[in-house]
Length: 139
Image 1: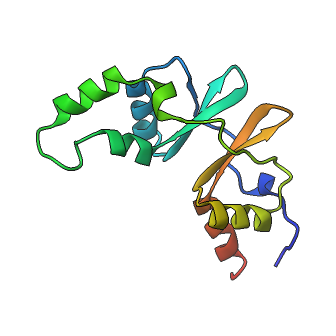
Image 2 (image 1 turned 90 degrees about the vertical axis):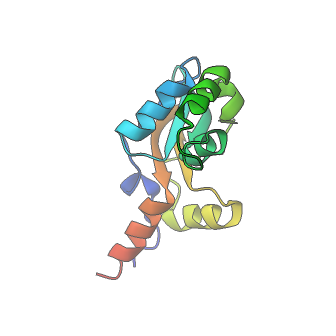
Image 3 (image 1 turned 30 degrees about the horizontal axis):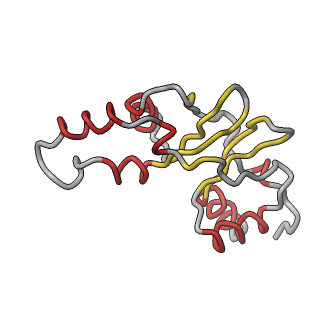
């Protein structure tokens, strides 16, 4: 097993982001269209927050009740990204070792972290990326 491999080898480099001034509906559309579960919120190149599909699901009724789409739409209109996002999320640098990242995920119960170098978003890394990496070590 490669012991000192950096997360730059497993992170997603082309990151789908949203601007902090976008509407929540736009965030939901991006999550669905790109089949992703986390979206960093940026102000310029700086990461100011992150929203997960779970954050959105906590706000909406669609998964629980039939015919509640109107209520979901109202909620998405009423709230702003700033009200829903996790502000100032923990970030990691692209030279973080994969093993160290795995420990962060386990201890802090995150499922995704933005990858930031010199204050600029360079990628995103998820628990799925780490699991895939560890599975490849057994091939």
